[in-house]
Length: 340
Ligand code: NAI
Image (cartoon, rainbow, N blue to C red; front, side):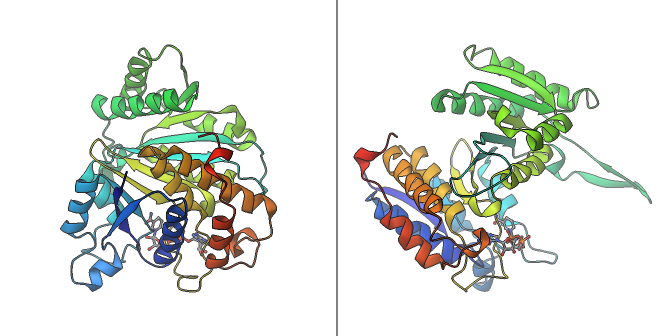
């Protein structure tokens, strides 16, 4: 089957890491027609603002996008592309799998957890105002609808991936109404999944336990601000932003992207590590049913990183983006060698 996927190369190192990732996807033999669209600085330079309508229409039409990092221009009048994409496409669930990569040495081994972050509300609804000079009020919006659909997605994900424990992270003892509603919505959804254990923990304790022993956790579910902070903490547990994939999922579309930015300091130098976007593309292939190709890509990356001879500068190596990509493509296992 041929898939049509919107491709947003993005800014800075974006075109380098998307080019590397497209090469790897194509090397698996999966048939993809890429519909390349503009966003970010490239779109601004073409006089179309940061997020052109045709880019959104392409994602709505194909329902799947692979996105490179995008620079948000500093200054008034520029809307963040990431926020714009999430709002326009109602991408309500941010999914970040956090897994120890062989050969990437960190404080803890065998980390394997997934962070689900509510993407549309909480304090990020952006409702702030100055009550009187010197006093500012920010509204934290929590709805049962948004909390329950995130919880449902996390439980479904756990069901399909064989995960058996979901920890809801909150501060319901202090924010009794808002976090209380989030927690209650999760409890209600959990009743439909008696074979998955749900527990809950305050967000501050989760932060401490993650640093002490992240292997205790399986799936973490939380509202927007907590998720923003903890998902980067979790990325740090397994080697940083260069190796962690991500997805933003909605009912009518999904955007897969690395969590790092456009890295202007190394842009155009063929130095960027494309691993995070390659792993995001593996998530994307799994999402569209190409499980074998997804697993082959992950195994190839694991092989190259554990051999340790070809790695990019951020992981202590000297390889260029191109050399690393060549090595990953050369390490692709045959379909019969993997369990998808
Ligand atoms: P950044 O993630 O671009 O860079 C932080 C540091 O990590 C830099 O030293 C960079 O060289 C390094 N780095 C990042 N990704 C790397 C990779 N794949 N390989 C090797 N080294 C890598 O974060 P920063 O500097 O805060 O943001 C730069 C721009 O990116 C800003 O305009 C920001 O708005 C944008 N950004 C976009 C995101 C997105 O599109 N999802 C996410 C985060 C930032």
